[in-house]
Image (cartoon, rainbow, N blue to C red; front, side):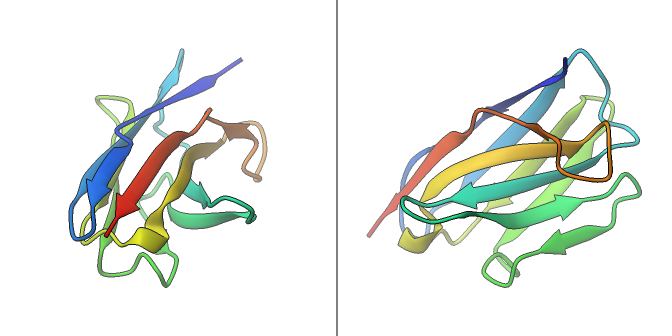
Length: 117
């Protein structure tokens, strides 16, 4: 079974930047749709950004202009560059992939992002 390994979370002051990384174990990401989701405490998990196998990107309104999703198929890694971070960006960020279906069926364990003012 494919596992998604996330890294790059941490504690950052408002206005700062973080870059999250996601790499699936045991397979390439080429041909896969990949995405990032955020779950703040007491809320549902919401989509932040996604990128299709053909590099079509989607961003939540809250992420537009500040976050950039990208993929490096050679390194088998998907990135989420987050700039201009705000306290409301705080949450657990999950990487997801559409591997066996057209749904987000494979998830990472999550990485915590905390933005303080």
